[in-house]
Length: 309
Image 1 (cartoon, helix red, strand yellow):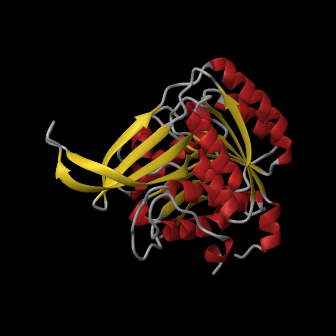
Image 2 (cartoon, helix red, strand yellow):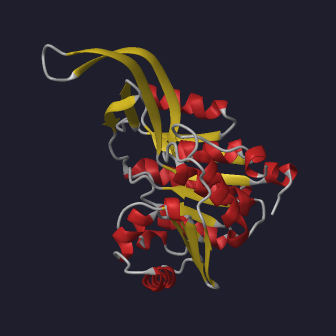
């Protein structure tokens, strides 16, 4: 299945969810601290990347499609840094700012080629700012071909049910990367894309493929979803829909880093569906994109050329 670059460039995806700034501090470790038994890291280089829903939107534009990003951040230095980073990539930004909110920052300290420490800065947004986000969503929705909700459990999607209802009413495909153990708020989405650990939290462990099939289909009917896409790392992916199931095997030749692979998979699915493909047609390509991205370091993306090579 190949899509022309032209049809990709016209596909418009609205990404809504929790964004974060991924900070990397690289340094040299030459000694242990005299104050405590910890390494002293002399920082030599700093790097900043789009994280969370911002990385998902970045994956959409790397594929050659158009992305809008709707989110809530703080009124802090990290939020302005993140907005500038996102805007550089050609994503249209719609950042709601809450002065009491800390923009989520994940700071990783790396020395001797390994992560020594990760510091997380975050808190939960207030409902007033989230209500204004829903109003912006209503304005943006008609101009997009698909909606992607990227839930990182940071509180930015408290009103996701209202937004799904609006998208459903306009017949827009709704793709969700879910979080937590209660999926009832994702009712009526087109597809949710949990990984194994996430799905187990919701339906419990499965004894074999037949048991998984029964449980996945039960979840699908209960939540009135068109499909459940289970991403299974080295076991590939399985799509459970009204026609049964479709499985594709993993394609990664060398797994270098699984960070952000889930972001790439759902961004690719959303882009292809926005361009007119069905979930079943998009599946092998999203699987290929996931396989390509785990061969790269850190949160990475896949281009149109790589996907259809």
